[in-house]
Image (cartoon, rainbow, N blue to C red; front, side, top):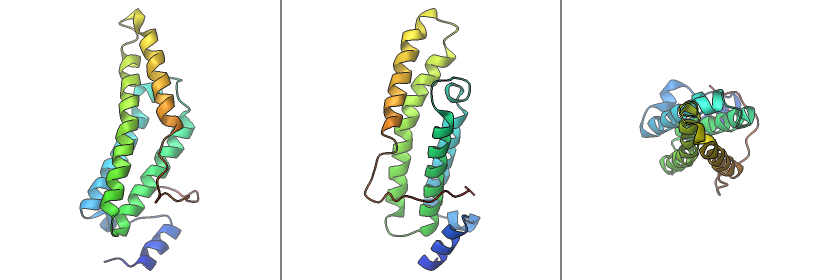
Length: 146
């Protein structure tokens, strides 16, 4: 078991070691990491000029860091917090998937302009309120991701 003092020390040094991610909380954190990477790699984000990519990268980095620290803490409610983070990520991923699908099909159908515009509008609406403010959310100083 890791003490709270040890978790705080690790947070201070901005790293989480691999053994911290052993267990169900670690598996959820890895799902969050993979989801963030998938969102950032989709063509609508990487090739399109629809979204403020640096801002999205900052949000994804903060989410990844929170997921790793939550998994490492293994405290009471860590699993529930990670499931909440994962569901928040899935809501964003659904909007980005719609945009990415329309963006990839744009050359095959000249009438997709309206669908792309609607998808951009929907994605920006989700991003304006993402991640949702929750009671346990705390402001974290800028840290490097592991």
